[in-house]
Length: 64
Image (cartoon, rainbow, N blue to C red; front, side):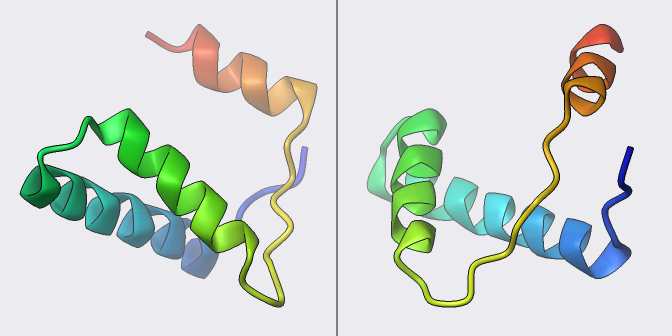
C-alpha cells in the first residue's frame, strides 16, 4: 500500500478544516461543503492523484 506524504496529508487536513469553517459560516451541512469543495477542486489544473486501494479503504473502516 502506498503511503501518503506528510505535506499531502497536511493539505488534505487543511482543506477539510477550511471547508468545515466555511460550511459553519454558511450554515450548510459539512457533507454538502465537502461535496462542493470536491467539485471545485476537480476543476483546478494539476490535480493531485491520491492512491485509493482496497487495503486502504478496509484499514480506514475497520478501525473503531
